[in-house]
Length: 254
Image 1 (cartoon, rainbow, N blue to C red):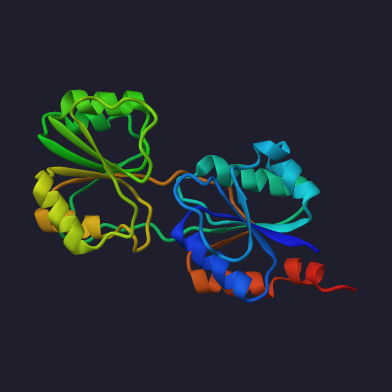
Image 2 (cartoon, one colour):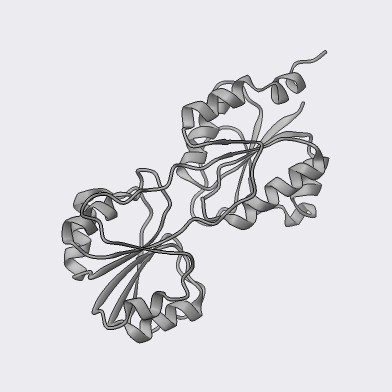
């Protein structure tokens, strides 16, 4: 029986995988397994595809009919690999990425194409909250050299030694406004650093930054190769997959 390979690791991926499984779609949910293992009910693949000789090899040897990419919008390497591997295998590659956040009245956003100028832009501040996931050691060191106190909030502890003035905060969303307000007040945050992840899970920090009238340094999303179908609404994505001839034709015996 042909299967759908869902590339996950996000809250949206868990919700979509659960809905598809409940509607009878045979799927494999793939994730790196860095934070937590979801309880979905379908087959799980944890640890990536290098153990199978790469994604392209996996698609060809595991009876995959289509790939649904629901990785993080900044997982550019995986999303690019998915498109290329699907082209090689001759199967469709679909993608769901939630819509990007948009600045609102009262926001003070500095939108960045990359992190190169960030250390200099933060220079002289007393307290900065970094909520952009894992950062390269060199970049974090440069920021720490220019800021009195750096607060790094991630789900997984960095694998390198942190500078003395970097305070690591272990946290996994979703986050609400009351919690974000209390945290920023406690730390006296003067600037917020974020990726434009979109969605509701971590958006509260932006409303509190607006409330506190502090700048937000927002990293642009990477430019990705076009998938065969792209979605930003979960319901429409789920409906398309359930009704897709690419899967239906392969799951119904002739």
